[in-house]
Image (cartoon, rainbow, N blue to C red; front, side):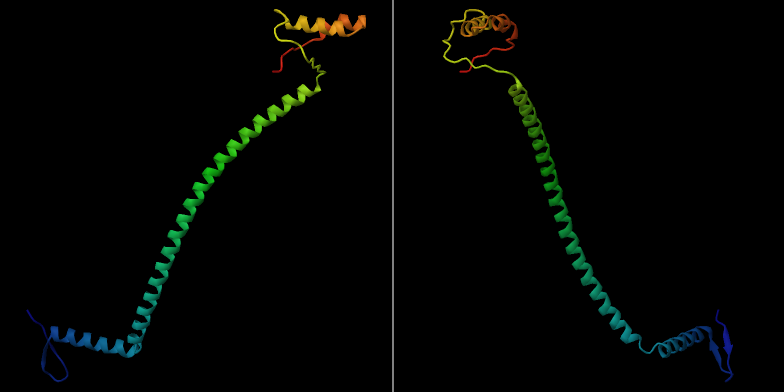
Amino acid sequence: MTTEVVGKSAKPVKAAQVTEEAAKNDEKKIKKGFPVSEVNQGEIRDACVTLEKKFDLLAIRTQALEESVGTMKEELGQNKEEIQLSKGNERERQEKLEHLENNSRRNNLRVLNVPDRVEGDDLKRYVASLIKNAVSLDEVKKEIASDIQRIHRDS
């Protein structure tokens, strides 16, 4: 079913012809209204190529940064382990230092040239008798045995 349109010339025209002519007229109007469109398309293509290059560069930089961050994370983990070890060593050294300070505050006597195994079963009693024999004051002799806190041999 075709519809005929009668124009000024009184010739019958089919509807399909009218739409084709309208499309051509519209295209001509658009081209007249935008005469630089071909130039703009070239500029747009160039801009797209430039943007693609920039995106490629950004992708490369992003990958390099991600690798750097990964390396830094590994180093951070190693540093944390080293810090924990250092803290443990510091604690041990602090305890040793406190022990040495505590021992240095005591009134220590060092008895030299005592032969091995002459004390019998009680080293404390033997050392007390050695000191009593070496000291001439009777008051000191009474307190010596009770004041001895620790006895040990140095090899």
